[in-house]
Length: 123
Image (cartoon, rainbow, N blue to C red; front, top):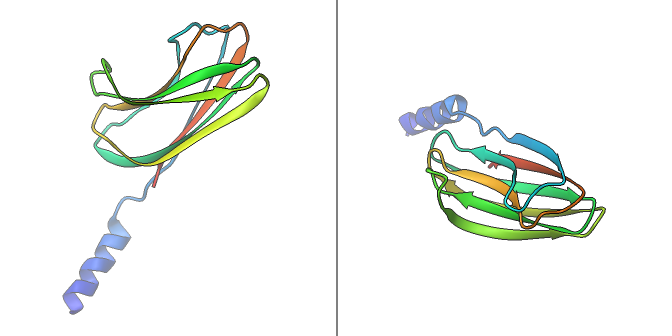
């Protein structure tokens, strides 16, 4: 029994803690398909993430889980915002393989300003 306690204590003290990271970007007059912000996994990991998007006029963003080669979208969510407002989307328990990414792109070209923040690596 003592060995189990020592093992548990070892795992608690020496395991790498989760570290959340922010990725933030802004664009003026973005075109349809423009990548506003993205985060790439460097190793396989379970993650959760939140997207906060702002647009000076009504806009729709694509929140995408992309494959490691960045050639295909595995899952996608649309995030619509009204002009001058923020929209938010959060999800939990996404498994990212090495080099897979979460990225946010524009649905359509707009004449205005957009700002997107991506909080990722939340456990």
